[in-house]
Structures are given as structure tokens and as C-alpha cells.
Image (cartoon, rainbow, N blue to C red):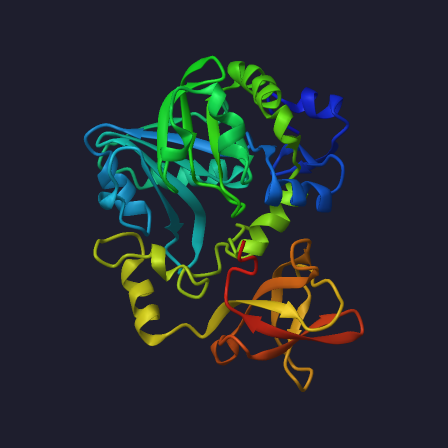
Length: 360
């Protein structure tokens, strides 16, 4: 089990630690509902240093990125980021990721912790054009400072105007006494804020200064359990739950990051799928009665016939109702459609809804 550079800090704070993607990670501190509420109304900090970072550089860097990712990275300008995915050659997804353009010949790819080795091997395998690749995952830490008070609480730590960093943009600037920190606004919670990328040797200083600066704003450490409820309320996909090697970006509702204006791995087959229409779709649903949908539960029709299964589900702290996502045949995809979630012996009625669940 790997530790992050802050594992000892979480243990000292009394966090409940669990194995996650090969790392010893804090799942909660005071409880998921309280931590969720902190991020929705104030400011909280996640240690997500388990995420992977690859540096792609040189004159052929964009060529490689364009080949292995589904979105069109040529549209990015310096200090802009983009959500994308790595399609495999059988119609599924190797991983989803965020691409950061530093300049025309320097890019950072941020990938899921559980897929670091898999993604590295996949990208390297397709690097026939000779782009320079470096795996920085073991050297860098990542803090996500999230919530409506994040900008105000952290402004004293940097000379950069945090308000000026637009969504899916970033800056390389001073932060918490450290130079050349990457400050990005690519949050996974839907409540604003930003992420801090720094070296492992610097992150404890950053963490301490963040909590000093945020003390007057009620800042708290937040675990992975609340990160999951926050992202699910926004309808953001989680790799391994809602998308994986067997789900296509088209059926997952990620057509908007799948650009057929360029050539990429398996583009031809995905374009055919888009034109024909996928046989199943990832939908969002809310329970009409009390209950908590969980990953793996069956989705059934009015006659009790299994039509799919729940990929992510929880009791939404913001809405105080059971919410979830799952794959169903396309005829069940429209908002307002009635389905049922099999929770033990009960087929609990649910309604397909438009994302996000949480409107802010």
C-alpha cells in the first residue's frame, strides 16, 4: 500500500483510512454528510495526490495527444485545460483524463490513480512519432481546495488573482511560499475552487499554510467519501464505476468530448456508433421513495425485468433523496421515464432525470 506525502498528517487528524487505488487514503474525518456540506457552503481540502501526472513534451507532443485522446487538444491555448478520454481499440475507454496545455510543446496529462501504469503503457505503445514522455506521478502531490469560499480564503497565499482563473484554465504561480505551483480550476465537486499541483517535498508546507489562511473561513479536511457524493450530485463519471474498458464514450454521454474532426484511436467505429445511435445509454435517476441505490443493484422495468444496473448511487446530502446513474436500453433514456431500482426485495420506483442533480 502506497502512502501520499500527507498520509501521516491525515492519521494525526484522526481520518478513517482505507485502501484506494493502491494508496492508503482518507475516506472521512468527521462524516460524509458534514464534509459534503462544508464543500457546498464553505471550503474544504482534499488530498488527491494519488492521481497520476504525465509530462508530454517536444515537437511531436500534440500529435501524440491528438492520436490517443478523443477530444480536440489543438483547440487549446496556453494555460487552458480540457476534459478528454483515451479510447481503446474495442469501443471502450482506457481512462478519462484532463489535458493541461502549458505551451505548444509542453503538456501535462492528469490520469486516474488506479490506471497510472495502464495509461502509461497505452500512451507509450502509441508514441510512434517520438514525443518525449515523463511519468511525474511519484514526485507530485495534488490538493483540491473546493467550495464557494475557496478563492476568498486562499487569495492571501498567492500574487495571482484567483478570481481571474476561469473554469478549465490554470496558472503557474507562487502559492503558500512556493514558486512554480500549478493552480488550476478544474474542480470535480461543482462548488468552485481550484487544485494545487506541487512537489511532494513542498506539499506539507502548502497544506499547513492553506489551513492557516482558511481558518477564519471554517476550512476542513475532506475525505474521498464526500468527494464521491459531491461528484455524483454533478453527474460526473467515475472511472471503474460509470465508465471502463467496456463502455463507449457515446453511450456514456461523452459525445461532447469525442471530436470526429480529427483522427484518433478507434474514431471510425465510434463515429458509426454515434450515427447509428448506441443500444444503451448511461442515465441519471432519482428515487421516488426512500431508499439508497448502490453500485451493482439491478435496474428493472415495470414488469420486474432486469434492464440494467446501477453504476453509481448514494443518498444525496444536498437533495436528501436517493440518486444514481446506470446503463439502460436507449428507449429508457429520456427524462421523466419511470424505472425501478431493485433494493433487496423491493423494486423502488425511480425517475430518469437530466443532469446535474444538484443545481447550486
